[in-house]
Image (cartoon, helix red, strand yellow):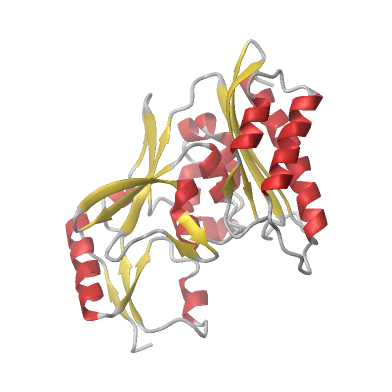
Length: 291
């Protein structure tokens, strides 16, 4: 353990300065927000000595704000804290469902959806839900801030788009209208404490029972969670009839590029992601209608 170092900066400026200094020195550094995966990662064969930068003291990273215009979720905001926010639960029930699937109740006291995103697991439950909700990453570095859509943030298995000296400060999401609701569904062999074999996040806007806008994202069936515009296009303009739902499901199946392993075959994953698409769309629509 002596090869690891720890620092808890008190500001964004101090954080990015430490990141830049470590990059110049060629020393590995890792942001610590929730930290639920850190000890597991430290025991991995590829985990080299590094400095852990704890961002839980940053005001911005602890910011959880819901306004009529948008929602901000800081990188250090735990799943448990999100679940205690009634406005957030009402606005984004699908994202909250996904957040609530990250580990046990004890883990959720520390785990963050921003950490789930940065870990970049293909099966990360919160990622398709974030994509469906239109979440945008708020990234900070010594040169300033930039934004990046969540669907562009994960670039491979365990890989994200963070540049050297940059870290994820939080997520910004548009506040949905009263006619917009989301849903997230996944399939797992067990009902609890398991990772997804397939997952689908959907956000729908309905006007007089007609879908006027949609975002559909799939997870655990490709190297990264994916936005599926073709599935959304199949739903827009429809009353979510059987033909529209089947077209959206087929688009999800077509967008999937799964692997076969002990938890599911390629064929099974493709089939189930279509099933989940239909069910999540129906659930989101029911929420708009107040059912």
